[in-house]
Amino acid sequence: MTHRNVTKGERYAFAWARLTAANKAGFFLEAITICESIMSDRLASYLLGQEQTAKRPGTFKDLIDMAKKQRPPIAIISRARMSWARAPTTISSTDLLREVNEWRKGRNRFVHSIAKSEPGARMQPSGEFIEEAKACAHEGERLARLVIRWHERELRAHRKAATQP
Image (tube, rainbow, N blue to C red):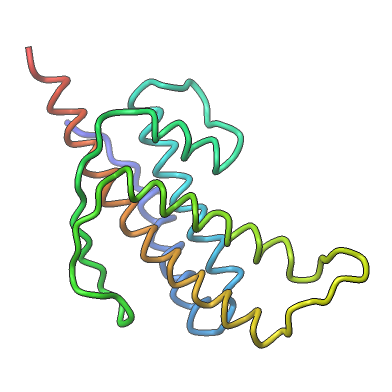
């Protein structure tokens, strides 16, 4: 019998609802942080399932780097249901983790530079900043959905391998 973490499922439903609400309300920094939380959780779960770590690594980058070192790449079919998404595509896990890492860099830029800047440096106009944060939030949502698909596929492969003699 498979153990189901009902509280985890409820929290995920809450996270996705907040993500949708944040995007609709224009709270793109909140949306970005929720996307990172979802991706970090699935990467950590994968690593714990692979018994590569006894505890969560310290940073999002650590999780990405550790996941890159695991099993051979697998393909994930993207069937994103978002209005801005392209047609279903296939992406390798290697490419997915590379995209997640690139997105992470954008995430850092938005989360850390809403008010912070180098002394004397010209700051980007707020309207431009928000539009770019919006694009980052939407890309984060696409990637979060793909990371969940990747995690599910990896979990199935891991369970199948564990039952093989």
